[in-house]
Length: 299
Image (cartoon, rainbow, N blue to C red; front, side):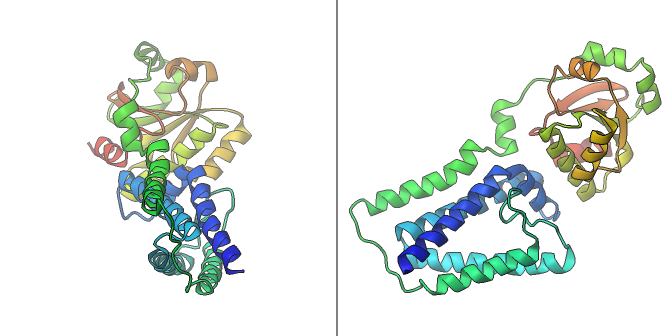
């Protein structure tokens, strides 16, 4: 019985880590929404949480450093529970992202989950380490794998941009033409700094970027009038985009999808940083940076 219980608890932790990994962008944005750390640091924290859950689950199953893993698991659950109590009282979030986006739990149900898990852990507290040849090597492999999966297979935005940063995605000649047409005239972006987001209403990654830039603007109390979403899609899909992302307070303008594709060479989402009517740089989903955004819009 204890053997089965230990395997199930270890597998549960690995499963919750994988579920967070599958919706890593949302998990990062959720951590960032507390406005305690920069977005880049939130990316590291999110991956450390995932790595910790993977490693502790694997150690419980393999019975390597069992006592240490058991205590760390209990302390982690206790810490998360205290955090969730705060969230339940002061924020009332619909999903605390404890099990990613696939299995949505509000803070109250997540607290119940943690209490049940801690109670089950008490039943297997007296287990002892397995002793087998190659135990140290297995432990090292588990550590490397737990850190490698979230940090190497799913690099942080900072690492992604350092290694794979793309050139400016904007067709500057096409943007000059855009500045002369009637839509651009209604936006009044000839003077000052603005960020134009070229998005598709039905695009999954466009929606994630909408949540991301919305949280960045809220956390840094930036001028929402300086964010303009140029979006293509049906009126219904655009309203759904606003509701799903929470980005309802930006300026929106519908754009012809052919023009949008030509403008950003088919790369959606693309955010164009415009200074006095001229594009100075662009960023995709991974390239959006809260410090860069704050500096540019505060100039």
